[in-house]
Amino acid sequence: MSTDPVILHHYPQSPVTEKVRVVLGIKGLSWKSVDIPRLPPKPNLTALTGGYRLTPVMQIGADIYCDTKCIIRELQRRFPSPTLFPGGAEGMAWGVGEWTDGPLFKDVVTVGLVEMIPNMPPEFLADRGPLYFGDDFSVEDVKANYQHCLANIRSQFGWMNERLQARDFMLGSEPGLPDALAYYLVWFLRDRMNDDGHFLSQFENLIKWEHRVKAIGHGTPEALSDLDALEIAKNATPQKPQIVDPDDPLGLCIGEQISITPVNGGVPVQGALHSISANHASLSRTDNLAGDVCVHFPRVGYRITTD
Ligand SMILES: N[C@@H](CCC(=O)N[C@@H](CS)C(=O)NCC(=O)O)C(=O)O
Image 1: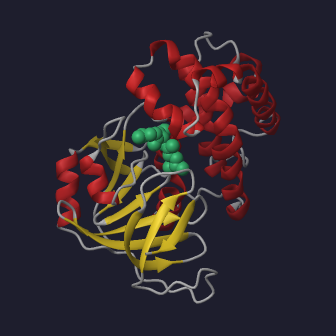
Image 2: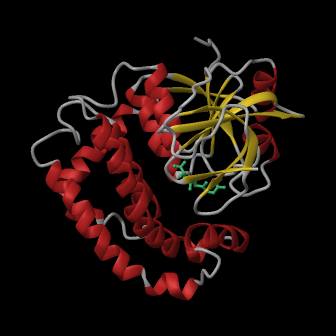
């Protein structure tokens, strides 16, 4: 296995990255931290990804992992102990992510955005509005939805609070993936809501759990420049083996030219199919700055097309 370091490309305010930082903490890993811009263009990031711009991205040598689903799955594969699935919680824990990253995230981001609007630079709003709410985004519509979303969050955080009545962490006495999936949303609201913690104060068990998860920390990060990260990619060779999947419903062949695009919109990443399974698709591409890289994506949330 490669001895290249785990490199996370992110910025401190990113809630979605907080999910991965907690996973790095659960696993007690040392890692390199590359600060990326909060707004495009991000040329030294997209040189690695082939156009994918979202945060975070993980790099290990010349292997580039896009989306937290893909990042966390790879961290669990490379560093299986301690597991993210105490008690054998594998499959269902990923399903929980489709709730927390899907409808619950949408409610939380609505509330968070409305709370931030008074202090938000216009260029940030012009980027994040359409990114999260579609091209027909309007401030008025999002503001009109605020109370509705807060009521939804109250129900859903209430479920988490109930779950934590009899246990220290979501799965029992040890932290696991569902803790990271839930924690980043609480972390986001705690930071963005301007109410001195009033809304969250109704969830007593959740608050005690929040302190426990916070105490886990983020492992041991060390700063790295984006240029050094590119150099690491350029000097490395992709490690992930080619995996063929004859049962894949899309019937794709290794080496075929493909595009992978987030279903919520974004730039298609193009390259030659390198590896595919029910949970991942990887493509090979060559970049002037990054050299030969292999870019990995999850399947759910991404559409693969042949070019
Ligand atoms: N499905 C993606 C979502 C990532 C996401 O939306 N990240 C936010 C940051 S918290 C983002 O990319 N915002 C725009 C940006 O950073 O350019 C994942 O799980 O990684």
